[in-house]
Image 1: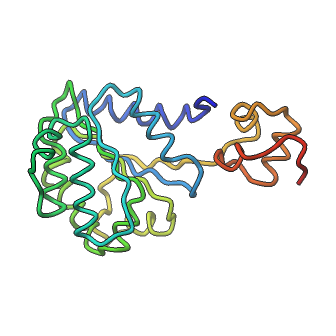
Image 2: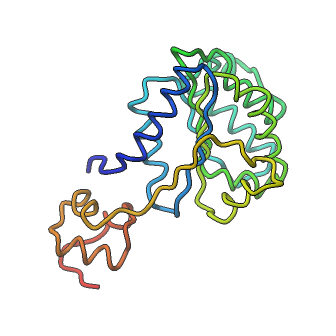
Image 3: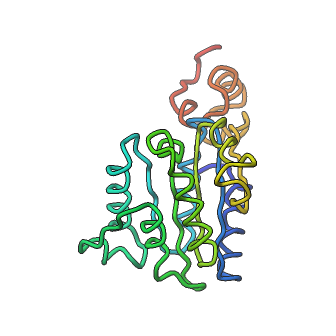
Length: 220
């Protein structure tokens, strides 16, 4: 099955990347949506077409040291300019240093895209991560040609992190919610007829992953 829909969201991400290329300054996208709505698939599709070096970090539910080690491994395996140096053993000793490292070598013509998928997992294990991210953004990423995309399924936490008084308040340059598919989009995704697509929508909602398991003929 091919990629379906998300035209609005893709255009929003493309606009943010174009702004980075135009200004040489950072953009920070706060991308939210319910679990299994297709957020990661959306961002992966964007990276495929962006023509820019990138790193996609899937945050683990692990302690700070292990999460930082995995982030370094992600950088080493990425297409970012710093990848060879990290692969040869350059190891950041803090999140601020790691995020600053990710931006090294980025230029207006070749900006860096950094994705942190399921950011709430990091904060569950390390309550100071949001302050580290805020410091890295304010001191290093905001003034660099970097598109930072923070993704999260925990709607309550993602909203709370932007409240007044929290470290990340006012930092994202764009908030981008990802909503479930419509019945028409489910039909396009699965190849079902209108009636079957509506049945699927009534039972599983507009969640692409769940809809692809639907079988024509099932009834709500």
